[in-house]
Image (cartoon, rainbow, N blue to C red; front, side, top):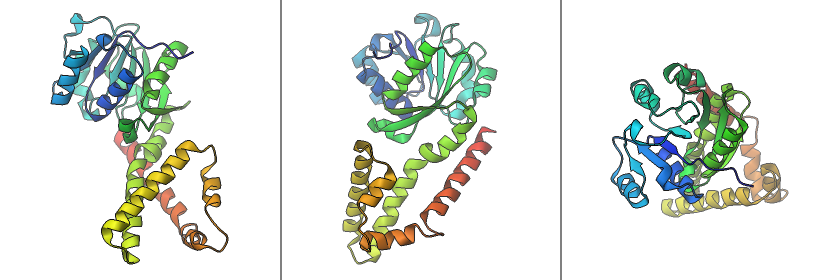
Length: 273
């Protein structure tokens, strides 16, 4: 049986990530009449969507029913200035879900003392096409029912991975949070290599892009491990094997990725510190 959805939800920050999650919630059946949007700089598209669906846009805190869930999706640097206004929307039974990069549960508790149940989440950009992955770390006040509700809300835009240790969020940021950019750069590098091999640049880019799109879809649909999928397309002594000798060399892709993820994790720690 699917987890129950909240009857009342307040979304603070209806930008790209907030908007992507909102679309997911509406898609899984969250009642728009119970949704309130808080964003003084809401886009024209969001204003139109709110009017079309009957969602309250920028209501006063005392003009809406107590929120079962409050989702905080503003820019992280806005937390300090927004906190007093956010406080007014938090009631004793409100679950706070934060997707603010670099803001720990401790940061949130210090600025939003009304919140007794909090989840810190790190979604990624493919949430905008319902293929995201979100890692979530619950605070000690989160009940089993609230965790299930969080899972349903975050799962509306992709997969959800629960963490026992909030300190792992920096590593998550380095792998899946920043990871889409690594894949986009892989396409750039593969296209450049194709052009260097003699292909017209536009053809090389289309081939590289379609190849990564297709490989990603295979990963999505197949239960096989990435290693098994790789082995399945590698003929002994063939062209793929020749290329993989370079990519899997001691100074190949793996150590480069180790350094890249370590650098991103280190920077995430600096930003959250």
